[in-house]
Length: 473
Image 1: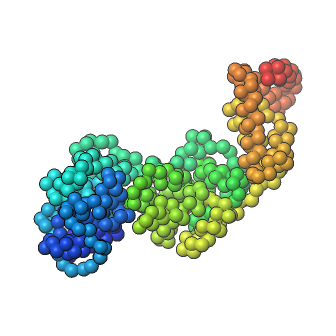
Image 2: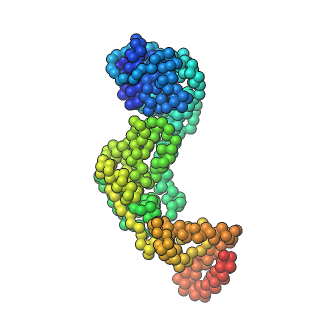
Image 3: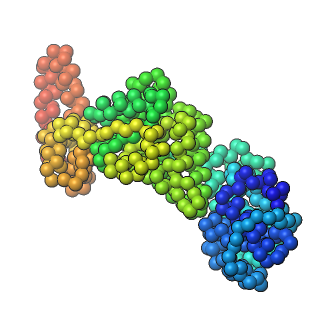
C-alpha cells in the first residue's frame, strides 16, 4: 500500500491519513483481500472529525448505517494497524483523482473531502452505489462539495489555473487576493481623507514607529482599556505615512487592518480557516511592504481552532519568528494577560505599548480636533464650552467607560438628537455654519492686512448670520 500512496502521502491531512489507516484496518477486519472504495468510505466515516464524515453526517450517513447497508456486522472497534493491503483499481483511481481535484482547486493538501468527491465522481464505484442505496442524493452531495471547494479557492488568484480546471474558472475575471477580501487598507483611507484626525497621541505614535523600526521584536501591541483610542493611534500612523512624516523605511508601507471575525465567518469545516490565513501570510511574504493591524489581538489565541486544527496564533508564530510578516496588535490589559502572556512563543515576538486614558484637558483637545467632522455631519455648531461640558459630564456620570470614547459619544448623541428634532433644518444650519466659517476667515484676513473697515463689515455680517443660526435652531 505504501507504493500506491507515495505520490500523495506528503500532502495528506491528518484526518485523511487516519481515515486511510481505518480503511486498511476495516478491510482486514472483514477479511477482504483488497481495499475498495467502500472501505475508503467506511474509513472516512470512522474518522468522525473529518470534513468528509461531517458532510456525510449531514445527509444522515454514519459508519453503523453504512456497515448495515453493506450487510456487514459492525466491528467492535476500528483498530489502526499496519500491514500491506492491495488497493482495488477503483480505489487507486479514487486516490489519484483526489489529488488532482485538490490541485484543480489550488489546494496543497489532500483531505477526506477530496476523497469523497472523487468517489462521487465515479458512478459505478461501490462507495457511490452504496450511498445511492442509502437514498443519498449523490449529485446534490457532489454539488455541495464543489461549493465548499469554491469557497476555499475564492482567496486564490485565478491566473494559475491548472490545465484540468473547469472552463468557467478559466474565463472568470481574476479573483481578489486574500488581503483585499479580509483586509481594509488604512493608508488608502487616509489618502482619501476618510480617517478622523488623531490628537494628543504623538508619544504613542512615535513609540509605534520606533518598535516597527527594530530588527527584532518589531511587532507592537497597543494595550489599553476599550475606548481610549488604540485603533485611532494606528490610523494616525497611516496618516503620517501619507504625509511622509515617518522614517524612509516606512514610507512605502501599507497598513492593512485584518478582519479576523470575517475570516472565521462561514468556515464550517476543518481546514477552511487555516487555508484563508495561510493565503494571507503567503501574500504578505510576496508583497513585503504590508504591515497588518489586528484589533482584539487576543482573539488570535483559539481563533478558528477546531478538532485537529491549529488556531490562528499557532499559524502566525512561524511567520513572525522568520520575520515574514509585520504585525500591529491592539487589546486590553486583561485580555493580554489572560490569553497572550500564557503563550510565551507568541508573547516574546511582541513589544507592548501601554495606551493610558487621556486626561480631561487632553480629551477636550481631542474633541476640538474632531469638532468639524461632527458639525458637518449633524449640521450643528459646537462651542468650546459645549465640548468642555461634554467632557466633564461624561467623566462624572459615565463611570463604566473610558475617555475619549464616552465624551465623543455624548456630543454625537446630543447632536443627533438636535438633528432629529430639527427635522429639515440641518441643511439651513449647515449653510449658516459654512457662511460663518467663510466670514471668519475673511475677517481674519482683513485684520492681517490692517483693513479694519472691511473687518468691521465682516464682523457685523457675522453677528447677523449668528442670530439667524440661533433662530433656526
